Length: 255
Image (cartoon, rainbow, N blue to C red; front, top):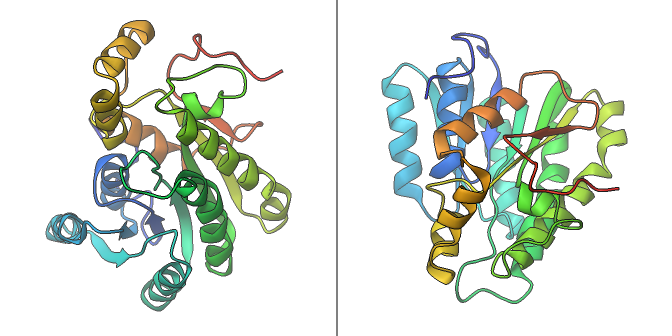
């Protein structure tokens, strides 16, 4: 997948992508770095992957740091933004990509804590670093974005509802963000081939992703969807603050 961003187009910009040691987050970071941005790679427990990614960016002539933080741990999130302030002085792009809730052994309310509460807290802690002209991008799925009007797989429903709750909570902040000159956009896509979510869904419901692929006709891969996320961080914000990626004909718009 070629980089959707022009070389040098983000020179001098400072970027944080949460949950970016692998998957969509990692490829999004690569696109930003290749366009000249200074990038912060956030990880929860995949430090080795984050360091490997940062080293590859630096070896290619880019600028990258790693910042460990569990978004559900308030102290570690505060420490993450303190590190970014110290290293970068501020932020121009914040991509809220980290999510979860299908992992085994987590608390019953973990999905809501991570996908709603932690997203809002991360935004609150980031606000002092975001100036006029900066942008916040929230990454979600069609299964979550349209959950109030289109049912999804039972195994994914708790995550979908929590991510929609997170989206709603963040959207409530749009007037405040716009007043400060901060852009906000939601990027929503179908299930993404090659992600940990797709892997876990297939494990819980064998064949689920293949069935979704047949129904949709095409599912984006990690690199393709990451390109949409990166583009959303720099292109004009849609009037409804939503960038819908791919075909949404299987999903019923909210009335």
